[in-house]
Image (cartoon, rainbow, N blue to C red; front, side, top):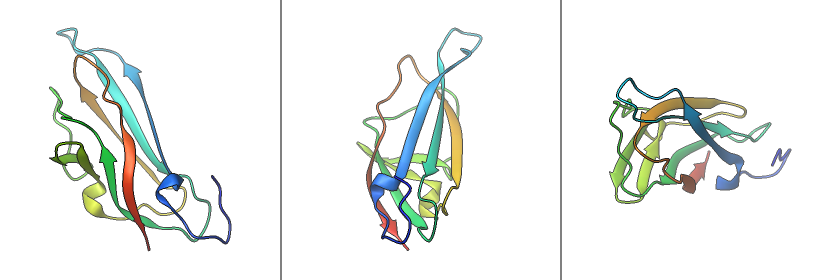
Length: 107
């Protein structure tokens, strides 16, 4: 998106994920990166992600990513991601969850 001088939106949050090496038991591991792709003056907080019944065999730090309700996961404990900032985590499940931003607040 790379908006300069205009207001931000949930579309400025990008989610990338892909498989990594599986756990010793053969359960797949997926790495997720969540990025604020806005380049200036667009700090975004309270990022919520559509995530179905997200769960993981491997513990995900709940301050980084947690399911609040069905199809509602909270990113970064509701705290902000500044322009260009990202966070990442890994989860383990037999399939990759489709993840998409459902809402976010511009500060």
